[in-house]
Image (tube, rainbow, N blue to C red):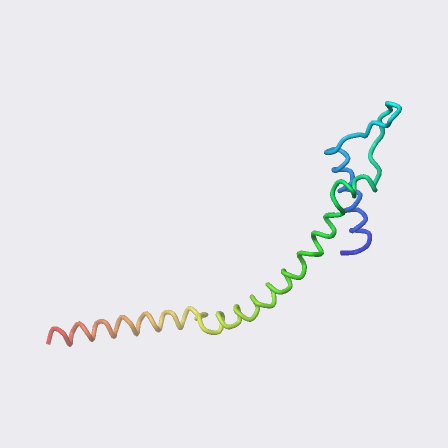
Length: 104
């Protein structure tokens, strides 16, 4: 994620949080919007950016694991249409020959 994307994401997050938490009433009775620091205290510094960064490591591990599993799976189970047709023909011939042997 680039710095520009991070800043835009943080700005959007603060905008949404200001809508959710609403304004703050000061001691003199005036209303004002919450500052960035007040919003960080409310969400305990758990921003979208931190959440995204924390999900990258498990995702990277998943990608590494799936690549090893998928290559083995592809090597063992992938057949072309011709191979599938040959095996079905071969299986049909074997079944027919077994039926004939049983009858005799």
